Length: 378
Image (cartoon, rainbow, N blue to C red):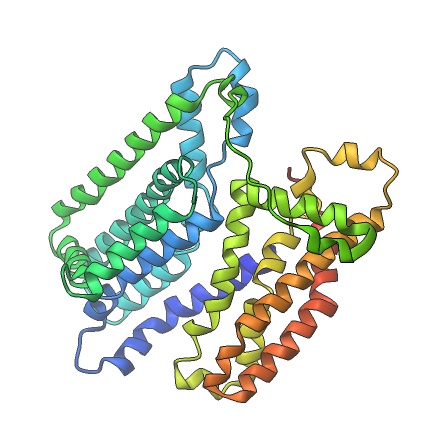
């Protein structure tokens, strides 16, 4: 996770310092600052989508506080305040701060750029709290990922079919804030509303006995007889598959399979990436190993609820690990098969993906399992 964080920090820093030159080259007849604002809509919906699957409200650390004589409003403010310190809120700063410095160095008015930078920081916090509002509604839905897909699809559709030009509206809005600092009050008001709504939702749920309520649902038993061919590890695989589908967080991980399949579409339609063979291997590792990386890094943390029970049974630990290993291997094979249509962009891409899948099965599975053993979080 640290390597992932450092990788993205480096990517965002590179983007921040290089974006001005890229925009000047791509749009020679347009003001780079205006062009950059035209992409803010795509950044907002992309950030919102990524946060939904990867960022969770830090409520685990609150449970011990509920037994103490502390006001619930204080506890709620603590939880929401702690969410502000998330890595996802700091990551965009590694791009927008260097870009702002480059703009000021290129001759733009410093006061306008600083106001624009402040507006973007407020926007990052709005996205942070908006994500938790969407998650609160998704928790009540059978398909937990449906609300975020609906929100993003509607916004993207309105812009794509030019019903509401979101790129122009948001771009013009940020330019207006840069030119008229008094307009900064609008995003501040939106931030206050999002914070207040989160406060209201969380305050209603923050009771010590709220987790004791049982929800009666009809059990839909899946046919997992195909796992029997794996012998003594079949019971573990059945248990894992059932738990993955019953728990919201693991179900979100399973949904990442779709992102893994579509990952290449971010790069391969652009001719410059097709000629870069090393990029095909890099994309292949992520595309075929998306589930492997996200699921594997939390082994054995996924089973922390009953880990002590497992360790007290007459079960070989090798069987436990082998069942996880086979699940990850199956996900790699499945993602490779689903990614075969990438051959449309060239047979070399398919060969690179095949090599990446072999690497994921032979090397990455073991590295991720070993790394997961150091994860002390429940």
